[in-house]
Image: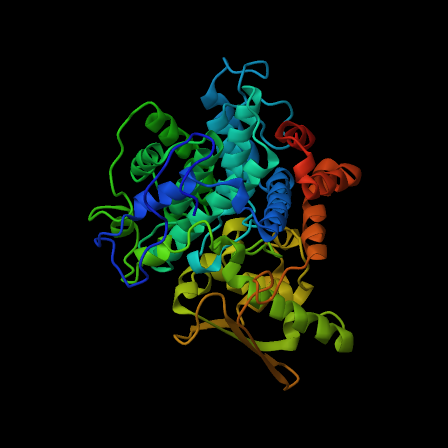
Length: 498
């Protein structure tokens, strides 16, 4: 971890390393200060070839899933309409400092609203990248904040370099992922959505890198963010659009917190580790480890373990989708397309934590009638994959919400919990009507480092989402520009994405 910020000359005598002994949020490790110092003192010299490759991969994926919401998300128009009206008529495309919302033409949004919209659209398909240990999506908040702040700075005559942009994305991801790892699955049982509660801090870190903020200012912005971090899991009750807005709210509020901190507004101290702080409030986990949170900051990049999603559904269903798709393909070779009549029963096994989100046999999960309920239904996803297969980038499952064959098959699926299972592991057993039985077990879904999402799959997914919006020629141009990001200015990139 560098100790001197070469841009603003700020020096911090503390290191981002800390003891590795187990700790609780009340222990005296200054986690907030060390995390703020990490963002304030980050240097482009810390960018490794592996980080460069990963940033380009997640940026291309973010663009794809964000523009995909234009074609596939019914919430897009109402959200755009509301935020445009909220911003008011005094901001136009000729106003200084306005920013781009992907596929929405000339820049016309203040950066906080551009960040809100890009993040909300990027999360609308539940197709954005994930970080398994934190059970969250770090990209939508990180990249949306970086694009808006970078464009705003460029409009003001101080465009950040490509390396600064890649550094800001990396620091934002790292901050979000490390916080999510400490929140853990347990935060969901308290009713919070880690993507947004951790994402606001990552967004602040992104802005801090690009604006060259000092540690004190970042700490104050973090302190203010402790009162803005939010995201309720109650959206599962009726498949609401709250979830899609969560990362947008986080980015918007991050810009607010930074502006207040830069103006001298005092935020709460020790917001992460304090006795009434973030971890105390947001997770019931007894294994919050402040030493682990800050260990190796700037040298060990935890976010490199984040993964792209091949299927537009909750990550907890992905191993089931892939296994069911493989069974469908194998069965089809011998007896044609699978039908519900060919299957007597299906049993799924998953961790108790995953059961809460995707396995509970409530009516809206067993027979979902809207996209969000289907995204969080192991029943629907498995039935669809057994009948129609599984393909990277495929949005067609949600055109089959009323498919009678799917609903016939979901009634034959049971879900059981297995305390020996963790993360996204999946066990599936099928009893075929012809008397044959088949069982599979998969610990890591496609996209995890242990089961990698290859580059050809990255492009296959991007093209599936981008071509309907941009056309094939422009979509391929976007791939080329992102691959050569070091040769492109932020304004050139965003002009291509409008």
